[in-house]
Length: 317
Image (cartoon, rainbow, N blue to C red; front, side, top):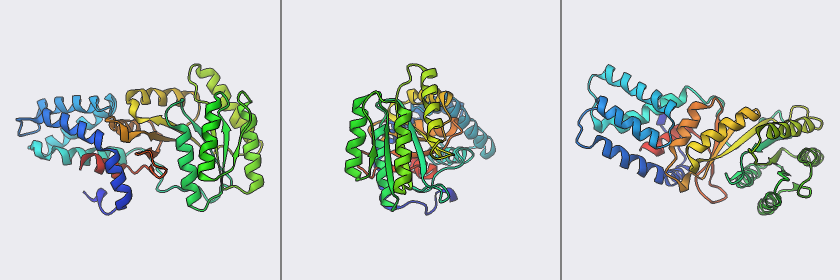
């Protein structure tokens, strides 16, 4: 299929292949059992395939779309053997994802006309939010960009300490206050400091609480409003970090956060330690928000820009 031709850098692709190994092994084990003894793709195979996709955390709505596409393919081609199912899945899922998720990133890049580029990061505690910020800071710095971090998750002392560890590791400045400080005040100081230092990118961490959506909405709205006193159109991107290993819970978190605040992009983490990698397919399809980054390992360079064709190729090859 032309979509998959000559688009992969070998080192990045190798990391992606390795990171998706558990998901792939689990999926093909289920698929193998589903088509065992069958020679052609018929209604029974499609029913089994539907169950495999749902149990692989692709999500019900996206699974139905995939099954419909394969049914259309079967009707058009009259006869499809089960040995072709892997390739058909690969092509149809890539086709489905290519119809959505516009605005996908192609590299760790920022718009040239936004300086400083302000990125606000949201997500519940434990999803890898702080780690994602640290890895993003590292990638941006490697691009020759000046990065400043803002520790506006003042609800937990550990959040401030963890961000400080990453700031030290990547060797970028951090703006912080005491635990319990006003998050909007920290964000204001971070943007002011970033502007004064001539920063290219300012990354603001925010509190990871979802116990009360109204409180979360009010807090994030206030943080945005205060930041705009320094940089008029900030934030330029609100990045929601989701833990891929939680499967369907990641869908629920995405629903909750997109209801509480405007989310511009998604990062799905911890895909290397789980068999739930199918969640990326479902999230990419269901939310009209681009998945920008995926975490496929613990190393500092194991945060990757999400490319739907690379992902599907690694998952189904």
